[in-house]
Image 1 (cartoon, rainbow, N blue to C red):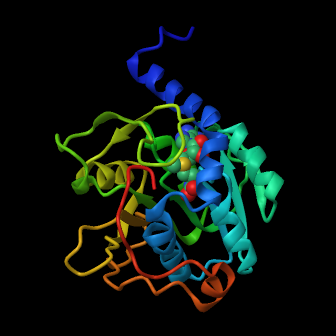
Image 2: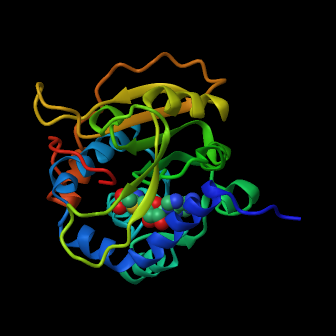
Length: 265
Ligand SMILES: C[S@@+](CC[C@H](N)C(=O)[O-])C[C@H]1O[C@@H](n2cnc3c(N)ncnc32)[C@H](O)[C@@H]1O
């Protein structure tokens, strides 16, 4: 019999519900370029890392309204997006440009026949937001091609307010235009905690990037590239290639420069 929900269960549930309610506002914000850090920096950062790996097929986990899947599809990559928010998957499907499934990470981890892959990359772009990233990472790892990678872009923990320790926080979306937002609980992780959580699911750090606008600016985000622990790859110190010519041609607005960072952007 299921036990009584604890506070973490309640926060996870509130997080899930926030993305049903915020679906339309989020899709509008992404599609109108209302989040400056996206246009200025973090979209280019994730595209640069993806380009560096030259994938043939990509699973975008927590794809939201689907911009990354559409961009990759236009560049000739077979891209699939999954997300737990029906509102956002509806919006992604309406725009087309890829395959979209409404499914959460827990279901993906439990049911290996859902969207089985294998994928050269499984990507989480600001979409690992709760305290249980193990099930999401297990699901991502299960679907990797033998030499595939998991790529995570997240807020840089050192650019967030104190205390520097794992725990739940709240995003109020105040810095994004519009007053139609529902607050979202999200789980802050230290850098050590990110790497330890990956290791606990059989993934090891292959590369780490701290995109920044200028050499002396704070990083806009943190990008972790993980490979299966059994693949004894050396830590890759190379910079991700700039957004490939193909992706740049396709998207037009993406630049390989970086600028300011935000909690979920
Ligand atoms: C900040 S949005 C990012 C969306 C998209 N990756 C992007 O770059 O615009 C976070 C997304 O993660 C999804 N998400 C969060 N937790 C999830 C879970 N447990 N399973 C599936 N999707 C989840 C949300 O529904 C939301 O669409």
